[in-house]
Image (tube, rainbow, N blue to C red; front, top):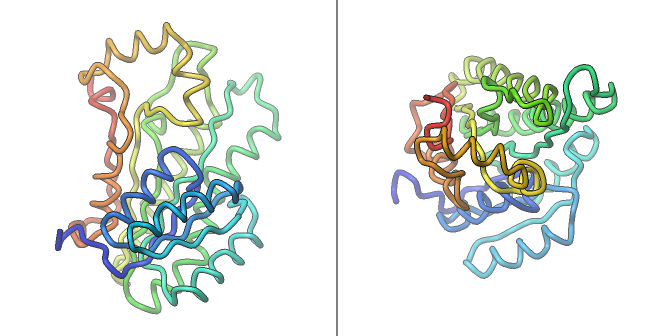
Length: 257
């Protein structure tokens, strides 16, 4: 617990209203961190904040569209005003717009890049100065196994998602090299298939895909609720104090076969 403990630290989680983001917020709280919850759906954030407060930590729900700079700046200012610092930033918000280059509209492409990449850039733009001032920070960017792997089945093509998640990995590398001397680590995680709002009505309902995924994955199943939290906590805690610029794929072995 000393290596992974986060007591008294402040974690900011984007995309915290559901799925992997909400699970991560619960994990941070369980290990003692106060948590700022950012997403568009304020009512969901309020409910999660109330849940987290019952564990003895502080939780701050903030309605924020992370594709918009003015909203991110306001949210970061609110976190600093409330807690006085930010120790951990988990850039989790993301969308997966289906379609290949022939069918994607420029608006779909731009929206994918805004939510998946621009949000990471903007969150870091306004959080990193506070981390540098304190000579400490842990930034964790959620990329995807699809940053390096693609789907062959046409109805599962997600070219904008592939490109955006690869960009997150590239941004992670650049930032890691730039801020290591400031005692700020920047790492990324590539989740495989987990059930979430993004996947439950798409991939999980595609029987042929699920049969193939389970057959090709050494674990023979998708990721279960909470199975990403250990990697998130590792990158967010003292356990990874000398680890930066790294990428851990959490996919039950899907990408190795």
